[in-house]
Amino acid sequence: MHIAYTPEQEELRRELREYFAGIMTPEVRESQASGETTLQGRDGAYWKIANRMGRDGWLGIGWPKEYGGQDRSMMEQLIFTDEATLAGAAVPFLTINTVGPTLMEYGTQEQRDFFLPKILSGDMHFSIGYSEPEAGTDLANLRTRAVRDGDDFVINGQKMWISLIHVADYLWLAARTDPDVKAHKGLTMFLVPTDTPGLSWSEVRTLAGQTVSQLTFEDMRVPASAVVGEINGGWSLMTGQLNRERVALCSAAGVQLALHETRRWAEETRLPDGTRVIDQEQVKLNLGRVHAKVEYLKLINWKIAWAVDHGAKVGPADASATKIFGTEFATEAYRLLMECFGEDAYLTADTPGVVLRGRIEKMYRSALILTFGGGTNEIQRDMIAMFGLRMPRPPR
Image (cartoon, rainbow, N blue to C red):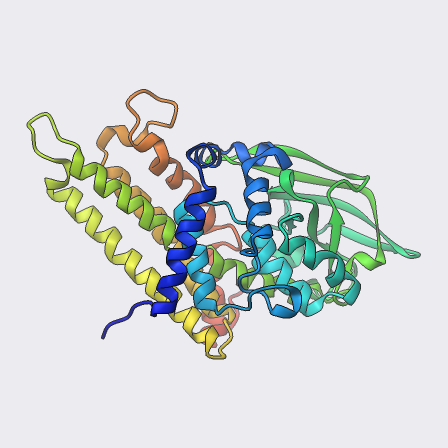
């Protein structure tokens, strides 16, 4: 059996590779790799690259034509994701692939007319406001309250571990609007401008060197027109958005790029006795293990893309299975690649003698968060058992 891209898909890969080579200059790549982009707001590379891709029509590669998109297949969207990752382009995937499609399905006509063109052009970015200090994995227990007051809702509470708020125009916010019903039935989704009075945040530095934020809402007032979908009907919006996010987390391209760079370094670098690093048995084993699993992950992604293109829906079990394998493999892969560097593997980017400018070490630290971002992998296994294997819900 020979599984490969079609000639048309190969042509798209070539077109995208040339496109990203033109906009991802060495200076831009370095800025994004250093993490400067999230601190510079609209002046940073993150915003500029997203805006450029929007103007050139690439952000809407998978959107329906009625909303200004290209209406490309899921397989072609996957090619775009992989090529963007290989080029180091920070695409606003959460905004494009999760918020946008959810607004298409549940938003009012007024919301669609206002938000979708701005998202498509790269002029509007979202941050996702779900996790809380007391409700990380179990989102049904979130406590941020939204109380109706005339034509407005008054919101009080906190969110934790919120990413990209520095570059976001709007917060995709989940809040509890009915405390007297079952936990998951009393939630509502809101569209909140990040400059709304009563919304503040403080930075939290993570192991990966990335900045996330703790958000505080103090009598923050938003109009009822900010509600997405039905009041108290936010749970289905949240789960649908998270299913899309879980699949989007697992592109194989990042590990492929790291594997390529590590193998090239191992071929070109010699030990004190003159032998090449790649001639060591353990290095060969590590590179082989990463190669085998990255090819398997690529096939999983192709299978999901093919199924969607032929009318299937990605259910919770499929999304969770992909998320578990992809994120746990990424952590394992970067660890195996680091072992190829020996004791220099743990040197960070600004350290003399650092290997590959510390990119693999940084990728390893960054990959850890993916095992619990978008829903912890432990809970994902419960979801596979319940929705995929029809087993009873585990006791809590």
